[in-house]
Amino acid sequence: MGCCYSSENETPSQDPDEIKPLIPHPNPVSKPPNGTDWTTPSVPSARTDEQALLTSILTKTAQNIIDVSAADSVMMEQHEYMDKARQYSTKLAVLSSSLPQKKPLALPSLTSQPHQVLASDLVPYSDVQQVSKIAAYAYSAISQIKVDAKEDLVVQFAIP
Image (cartoon, rainbow, N blue to C red; front, side, top):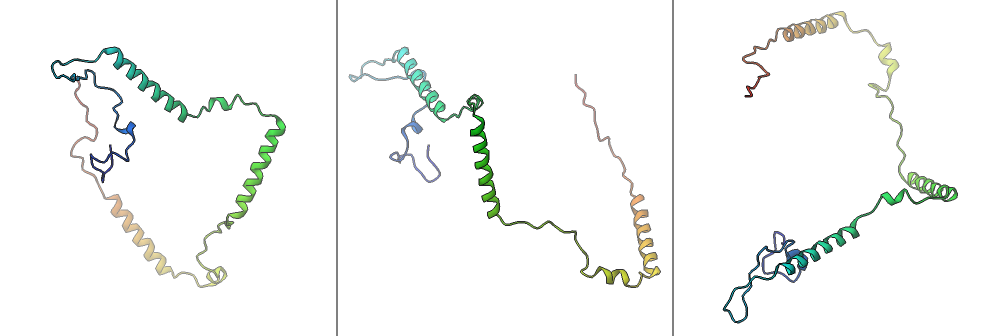
């Protein structure tokens, strides 16, 4: 295995499980010491190796799994439940007191002196007419926008 800065010959830091194949080669071929014949190992030894590997994988998996179904079977007495609830409430109170308190957000104000805005002169009628005229032109321009359909948006596929 390795990472981007490792090389193939760096093996001292690697775990032996990292380089061991999960499934052995189906027909491993070995040469006897005299070099005359090629023989294949017996199938039962490969099967036991596979079984041992499967057992080790299952054991590692069982160690890393937390069984949450067993949590419901633990019956707690009422006083134990009340003690835990009190402990959680105490911890929550301690933690919430250490957090900075947020102020409730006030409504946004456009001015700090609203009474001066309300007491000021009205907007001139010519300004109101100009804004109304510009809004009417914009509405007219938007209503004149037309889409020319060149082809259908939804096309039926011919499925034989």
